Image 1 (cartoon, helix red, strand yellow):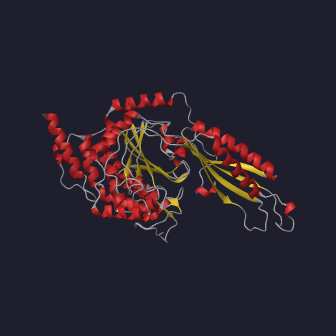
Image 2: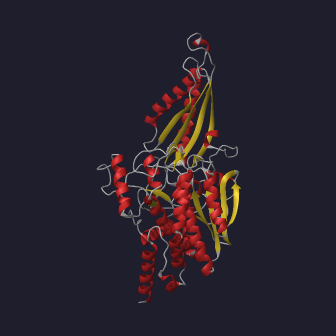
Image 3: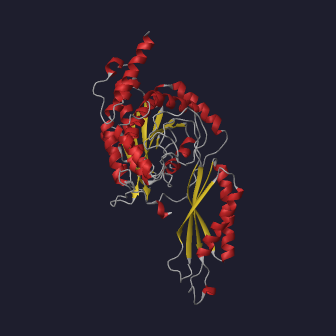
Length: 490
């Protein structure tokens, strides 16, 4: 009978704390004063105005990789004013920070992201209308990512203080997830060597806490150098660097037939010359290679390097490859994934409003998505627990190879909206995005408390981690030089 009463009280607390955009003014928290989870959940409801403000402000800043100065400062200042010990300019990255509360073991890490994507500026409207004030946009929802992490950290801190919980809560401000691999630089600098567990989440168009992996990736630039000459008067004296780039691209496109179907190769020509009547002396292509495992990516990369060498021979130019960054695939962790899944189901999907639904329907019409995917404009269910490999890449993968890591997705955008698009930017600045972030805050707060107090869960997570990692040795895939000031500096 006692367990049934406790369940009813907890369920009532979940409902009371789930009202969007408003703190839970009068919840059953007093009746469950001995429950750290209930305290954390009540605190998460009270953090709603802060999470909304942070999410909207970072969306307005829209700062790309390694340039998130205002976004980073906003989050770090918020944590510092709440009593966290904050170190800034970490791992030679001015926009990285580490904020810490508590002491001793376990050390629970919450990973915050806040970088935007270039070229994806858009108003928070269901039509394509770039904001003239900025060139970048949060087409991956990282404004919501960082805001919810900070809200959850403050909620967990409240519970730790009230119930005298031992352990250290640490928030990592992680710059440049979009191509810059800020977390890999943090790892290389030894900033994550003592943590016991890492927790993250990500904005999406669905709600899920699956044991899903990701694609490993290597990013690199290939620069060709030739000889300039008049393209009409003396073309025989020139050696075109652009020829080298184009021959390489042709070779790589032929290679696509002979790599596994799960691999992906993308490129852009970042520089190909200035005028058609000048044989280009320098040219460059920027490549991404992805596959389910880092070992597979490295094997394809070795073949692409040979193609670059051949292109240089054919064009009588010189080629130089510079590693930009790389990220490992996510190493799933079943005990942690199931714990997070349970908390996601306890909280439930975001409580969207009629206005949110109208926004979602309008943007789906604008993108011609009606009848091409899910019939519902917004995700109102939680996907079954499962596994598989996602189509994206993230430097969370690097973290997952050094410490047990768990994450989940919350729907912050209309169904079927593609990531890295103006549509995702619009949703990330709308009520849909904010409500998703508030849901994530609660799931993160509950999960953080679980990880702090459940020693058996940590033990099971470490065992699962060791079994999956086996003898694989993790090495950050980075250029040996310090992090750049901006991604284009590589």
